[in-house]
Image (tube, rainbow over all chains, first blue to last red; front, side, top):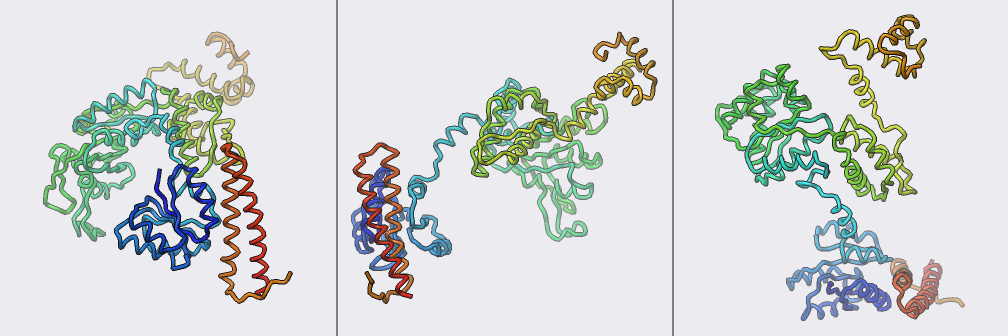
Length: 446
Length: 69
């Protein structure tokens, strides 16, 4: 409940405002002039002043000066019938002063007195927990992830995040940073986005004049992340020639800027991330072994979305809520739509889900609250990925197995039309039948 | 009835015309409150009476503006 003073010379107008403000649960007093308002402030204090701009004995702005003089600082809402007053207030830069334009509406009064309606929205948002302020999901896979984040956050260990593209590696890095409660910032750098020439400067900084174009001294990300967290995304894309420099910093916890000769101590946790598997790293000599052991003191596998489909409705609700907040809309999911989202495999993971929801949001009719999900959720990338994954050949397969897979894939493509399939395969229809019989019969392609 | 010619500046005349409009608007808001919250109907009737009176006042003010040209 607020104590409010209404200063307005229109008694009938004030009378109605009093009814409405009292209904909103506040105490209200009235003054019809600056003089009366001054008298109220002699022995009282108010939380909020609703102040008419033009009063019989001066401008409402004079009351603002008076309040400063007597050392009172209630919130003030100037009420005027002229939009130009808003511009005057903007120039005053008074944080406590707002403006309402007559004719007033009840919602305007509620907004200035009670603030934005947070309660309902917050209750909705709070229903979905943001673990470590960032992560969404209650599935078993995510619970395991949360446990790992909690454990590693208590230490200073470097973490390597391994997960498919779009699985949320940067979000997990943010979660570890949040859980660590360290003093410094989270600084992110993408090793794959930097040229071979610039990566040293980006990571370790440079001195003025170190190279052409180095017009000023620059701190590297290791220095920027001091007492905090350094997130090195796509670590496996770092040129192998730069890796010894990185190793030295990780071992000594000191950086030397490019062109400099002074060692600067650094104190930050390094979280690195890659979308390659650990086996790939080891087999293909992508990351030096010594660097791997420094970076991956605590490796964390981030589960792909298809392994935690129970989380899809939660994620979908949160993404839609964000879009509603940004655009002032009120779209909502139907339960069958959430089930439909769960049926798809999401090869692009959470990023693809978010993109699909955004696309559907744009396509939705603002006259309704229904989201217009497309008939086919697949993105062009997921289609290509699916095809390449399905047609993958790996060492250890026999020629017969590969041939059988190829024939079946071709038949699937042409809906079982054997003449067409034979043409595509460059064999006769008879040969195709013979091969199918040799693999155990025509079966589903009859 | 012919109203006497006014000598007030235009911005003051507009201000005078806005005052009843503001009262009308707030009384309408009050009526909404009464209806939405099952409050005594007398309050709504009183507010409606005020709206009618202020409509007349607004009309008079607009006439003054017209006459002042």
